[in-house]
Image 1 (cartoon, rainbow, N blue to C red):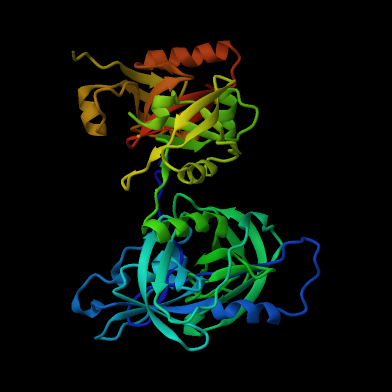
Image 2 (image 1 turned 180 degrees about the vertical axis):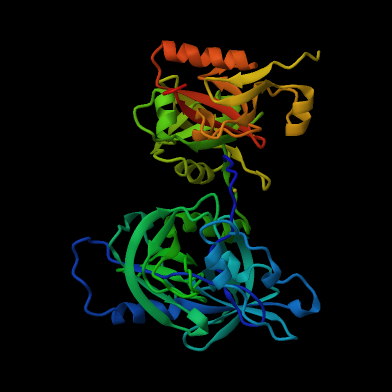
Length: 486
């Protein structure tokens, strides 16, 4: 599995009546046929599926008032992001001086023997979990397994009688504009139904490395988290996980985990109690129009390999920095975000074919996917330095002092950007002080003069852009540098 640098917790949290937390979630119902008429009523569908939707109560024994670091004291993971205001408005509810913290969420039964699906954040760190059916029956529940990376959890209850169930649907068939129905327990009000449409697909909200959310305008509020999203046939095509709200209530923007992503995770949690994912061993980035131009790619699609991990499956298969992965195991890679999900879904030990663009040529690589471990979501001389008229930046060759300051290992080579002119080419195109430029269009550079020469050679060949391989904060990435004015 490849790694990405950004991590974030889901937008929604369960209601913590005696403690802290927020909950968002959505449950949706869609109609498969784009031209199908608007239903006169959802009553039949509601009667069919609502018995399998449950209220989930989770308790944390330690009272936050005693000084323990409870959820309301947790740092805001969205600080400095577009979701910061949302998270503040969904802050903790006032906790009673004594007693356990209690959280309310939603879930749904997928097996009559008592298997219940919900969000990880509904039961995270809980000491006790229970479910309540719409007919009033209550059960203590055991958490069989959780997967924070997709915000999913599987519970099990003991029951003498079969429980009502719902079945999985195909989320890939859902289209923008399809009807959706949400059933859950907002604010603890069990069995609440809301209807809407699928308003967008493939949303990346910064919740995790496998974000592929279905967006809906069905009204979702605190307590809906973990509830199912139904299509017009009454099948689960999503799990409500998050909402975006600047005012603490529903504003018609909610997100659900697609069922086709969830099914594999839930199946592994049921069988093993944990999730095993594939690992490729590359760091990737999006192909921008500038990088596409620099690499001679007609369209800015695919996943650009910025770095290859040592001893990884990718290294053994011959992947190189600068490769653009266009197809993985028969699946087209349109954007960078497509690749992590596809790799993660491959069983470790499986051989797959990967198509890459290298130096403008299509190339096939055979790679054996490995298992991702939990840590994996890359003689002294006088320094040559000076200002680059080509970049509008101050540059320096790497010195022992700079290596120590930038925490670089001895194998790192390149030219250090020590300063950028405010309105220069370097600043305009994303270079920052501390960046180490190691390659220009695949050619190694280790002095400012070598960098300027590489840029001059590119212009002599009428190139409109070059690709700079840069190491920043320990991570490798490519920057596309247009040569206009360079």
